[in-house]
Amino acid sequence: MALEASLPDMYWVVAEITELTSHRSGHAYLTLVEKGPRGEPVAQVRATIWAARWVQVAPQFAQATGQRLGPGMRVLLAVTVEFHARYGLSLEVRAVDASFTVGELARARAESLARLDEAGLLTLNAALPLPPVAHRLAVVSSATAAGYQDFVQQLAASPYAFRLTLFEATMQGPDAPASVRRALTGISRRVADFDAIIVIRGGGAKTDLLAFDDYALAEALARAPLPVLTGIGHERDESLADLVAHTAFKTPTAVAAFLIDHSAEAESHLLAYAERLRAAVTGRLQAARRALEAPLVRLPLLLRARLDRETARLTLAEARTHALDPARLLARGFTLTTHPDGRLVRFAADLAPGDEIRTVFADGEVSSRVLGGGV
Image 1: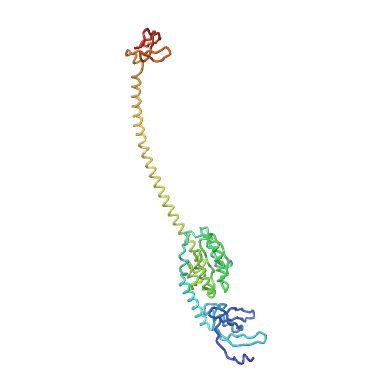
Image 2: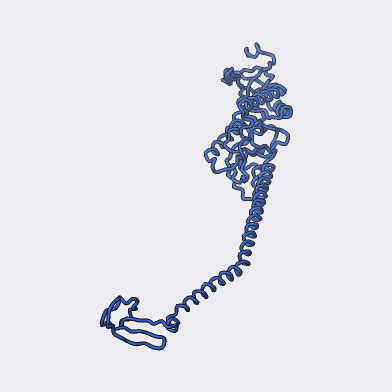
């Protein structure tokens, strides 16, 4: 009571929300911290937004900021100090200055964007080549998300054989950045199994986009070993995750449409190459056929000329053989003398007195004995 009496007014307090729980009674319970220059907590206090005020504050804040009031936000609160004998010091939140949070979110996002740019991360993933055929896809999403189901169905209805591997992650709320980073780590261990990484979450309120402005998540996406395609599901907004991705799309179905078109383009190129190859092979075959037909036309002429040459050669050989026929020589007055064993007698010196010889004439043969010998 003394504390409340000494601090009776309403005070504006800047703090970061580390916890926010909506009770079934309609009240909202917060934990607020003040952090030091290195981000370490230096003070902490509990706070309450009673149900009657929470039903006004929550939608007004979301409408003004595009974000749901929650953990991780720096806020400017109008509070009164309360002290309970059992529960100790706490604050009652009377109002939330949404414009302060808008500025804080914009400042934090601008700082993160500048850090990404300075580190060369905005174009790092975009420099990775997307394969002409990207069918082996590592998908980061919630298995129950409608956007994921639409993505799967659209690819399944296409004429191409996409192979999807789901790395399930929480895609909204304070746990989303760490959950998506864990999925990326799992993909990195199997990088050879995939052609690209797909990060999709489907539709949702603008308030759900905050997780994808997380610097650590954006850095992990930028440094991913494969091209990253995002379809986070916001038509008008562009998150840091979109900015560092290889290619960003507004919705999961837009990602699916791109992949189908990309495959169709690859198919078109392959068909064009196949047609060029067919034309080249056909041209070669036609040229070879023409070359073959030309020898076939000349072949009878070549064979005839060769046959004529061989005929002439045989005729000449026949004439020579005929001219040397022994019968013709005998008819011209020559004789043929042999020993009884058939050996030809060529010279007189081959004979000795007493040798028997046989002499063949054109009209017969005689046998005789040598009386005198040699030359």
